[in-house]
Length: 396
Image (cartoon, rainbow, N blue to C red; front, side, top):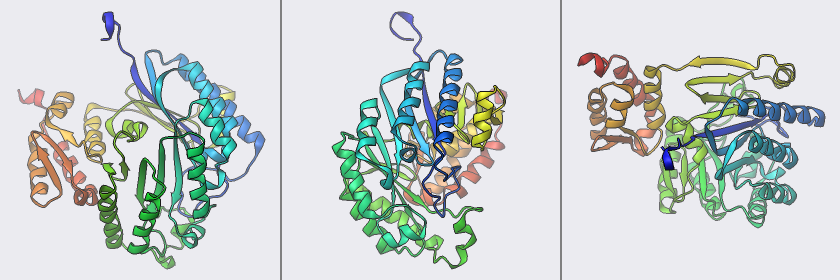
């Protein structure tokens, strides 16, 4: 309860999926279109704003503390469209004065005008997709920029007044060596970002890279593991704290929006293929821009999936998501929230601790960097243990 007995509002994150790109990367399986159709972009913007207005009317009692424009390429969509959507959010929801407001950008579409406009509108964080510093690899994977453009983009971002810059990188790219990846990290360090996301390449079925994976000179799993462990060590030595499997930040610059996903916070997604976790339900919007626009305009259905999450499922999500972070899982919190015994999980985690894959103290457990590499195996075992656990309430 707040001052004088007033109930505090529930924190809420808002995600906007912008499904437009200049070109499609060879590895990307996110929903996006590459046609620059100004009319379609305008119709999309109008649909998202209307959708936000409807959702806001049904969502009293919430305080928006993070807004994230992802894609696709929001910077390609443009400043005017993003500003209009952010205005719609402010009109329909109560937005915290200290909200983290992020947009994703590619180096080729970050103009000084766009940056200054968005900064004046209240955006305060930029997530820049650099991926690597090797122009040959960038061209091979279909990135529409070179590294020199990335360096210039960072200069423009700083001159526009942004003090919170996140950089996206990918390791395990075609032809990439351990030495080449370490060079990428050193060069990016010189750009002095506050946050770095380092993702291991996943070759997803249905992407162009998947079709040519057998002759693309991709680093094998062992090499990716070496790249990952090298990343952890190099970034730690430069003052970056690993707070999630793939994410590193200087103190105080962790992504507040993404932490909602990993810690079970509520969020609403708008735009085609966007997901939400809100009021005890999880739902996803159709992966079809034209269908989304038509559904909003004509009051039709735009949801593809809707499911109510049981307490047992939430308990499984708690394990899967929290063990992605350095916060890990806590015995007291787990048993209080889910009425399931923690002891069987702790016994398994103790075995992993002895192998150097987990750390535990006073009922709180997390995975080590080596444990993160084996997280799928570890989680599979823990989820099986959880599935076979008898609720504490029944045992009493």
